Each structure stands twice: as structure tokens, then as C-alpha cells.
Length: 361
Ligand code: F6P
Image (cartoon, rainbow, N blue to C red; front, side, top):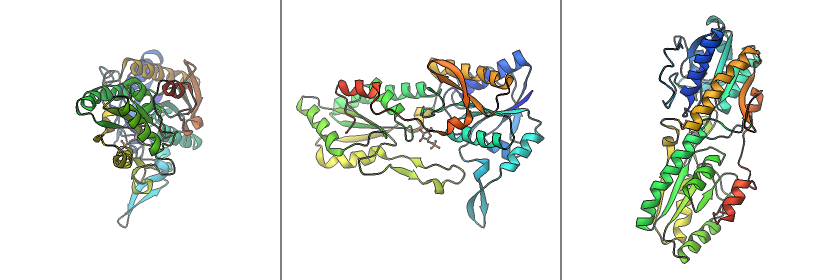
């Protein structure tokens, strides 16, 4: 078979490991030929954005972050950004994607991405393309799978960052706020916050009350703790307030979702009138998506990449690989469109609460 492959949405550690596993098993066991489609769906829309993806291309890429195919989160063929009379518009150009797919002589298309990429893959499947998917995102917020690769690495980076912030917090007796990615899901903040020993964890699933956070900080000070660490999701917001947005969806043609950011500053401003200690905000930003994947993410990405070939062998188009109850399985791409969230009364939150971590409620 001749198979197209693309990586879409934000990059994350493990994408190259998927590509390596996919191409190695695909070539060695099935004799497939792979076409790399560059820069996410942009490569399916614009000419000359493809290149052969061979065993040579995937040699030595296992430990590399990013993606050798490039990616984009602004090239949705169904809402393709185009300039008309000086203004950007979103236009349905999915027919071009279908035409290019046929011109490239593809028997199938492997899309590796988060909810946006997988959901576009589902729409393309409905138009007649043979699409299979592989879930990725540091946010771990896809309902179709219990775990996405990239999450473990990002959680490790957050933990190390909090460890490092502890020393300055302690030395200067400061309140340190760490703003963590994850969009509208708090998995990364919860994981990194528990692992890093944060005193307060604020996640989108549990809107916080300023008085509750102030009380926690004051209680700590009264007990002799001169500093505090707060892990805050970019999607966290005060009760009755709203999420901090850097750019609205309509300001980013082709992307379709808002760009979050600033929740740490919002929290610092709300706390400042009530707290004597200095408050500092660290935004971890794209550091969380960079660098070499952890061992766990390399293994998960490798399993996913190899498993995609089972989907193709069985011609289960419009499906993706996933992990459920510790086992590799398949699920429909339509499933990927639903977001997953931290269970506010789940075990991790309950246990964290039981040892004094505040969720600001
Ligand atoms: O989905 C991954 C993610 O890193 C989110 O956690 C974050 O909100 C978003 O992507 C940032 O996107 P960008 O890199 O386009 O600013």
C-alpha cells in the first residue's frame, strides 16, 4: 500500500517515535510505501509539501522531540484560511485535500494528532478518504484513550520546574505561581503539582475561590512555612470569573480554538491585596512540549505507531489506536472529538486533598 502520514496540531515528545515505529513495521512486515505530508494538513492542501518517508528518514529519530514532518494547527481543510480583499477568511477547501490525496495515489492516510487533527481526519473519512488515527497531546484530554503520549514527558518537565522553583521560593520566602498548559483539562497540573509537591493546585474542573486560596497561604504562614508553591492550569479560573484568553478563536483563522494564557497573572493580581509575601509567576509555556520523550512516552508512541498497521491491515478506516484499561485497542475517530476532564471527585484529587493540598474551593 502507499500510505500518507501527517502530524498535526501542537508538537509533542514522541511524534518521531510513532513515525519510526510506523515506517519500520510498515516497510519490514508489510512492504508498504510511505509518503510524508509536511506541516500537518497544510501538506495536503499545498503542492510540493510531501516527501518520501523511508527507513533512512526514520533512522535515529527515536529520542528527538518535535516532528520530522513539521506540523501546523492552522490548516484545517474545512476551515482553510484565505485572504480576500485584505482580510482573512475561513473557507471549506476539503475538496482540494481529497483531490490531492487521489493525485498522490494514496491508499490510506495516517493522521497523528490531538482532537483537532483527529476530528478533521474523521470528517475526511466521511468524504471518502481511508483515514486512520493515532492520538497525541501533552494535555491528555482525549476521551478516546486513557493516555496520550507526550503527557508523561511534559509532566516530568513540570515536576522538575517546580522542584527548581522550590529553592528560590524557600530562599526568598515567596509565593511562587507556576502556570501550566493543558487547555481546559487539568491533568498536567494535577500530575505535575502532586509530583512537585505543590501546596495549591488549581485546575479548570474546580473553579477556585480567592478567599480559600488566601486562607491556605495564611494557614501555611501561621504554621511557620515561609513560602508556598501553587500549580495553576492555564485554563483555571476564579469562581464566577472566566478563563484567561490570549487570543480569541476568530483572531486565529484556520485554528478554530482560543489561545489560553495569563491565568497565573490573574491569580497573582487577585491574591496581592491579601498576601504580604512577594508573589512571582512563572509561565512554563512551550518548555513543556520540548525535548526528548521520556521512556514511557517512547514506549507508548512506539506501540501506537506499530499498532496503526493492524488497523490498516484490517481496513478499519475512520478508527484510531488507543489505550484502555492498560491494553492497546481501537476506537472510532468520532470518539476523539470529545474532551476528557479530570474527575473532581476522583482518587487523585481525593488523596491530594487528604494530605492538605488545596484546590482552592
Ligand atoms: O494542546 C497542546 C497545547 O500545548 C496546549 O496545552 C496549549 O493550550 C496549546 O497547545 C498551545 O498552543 P500553541 O503552541 O499553538 O500556542
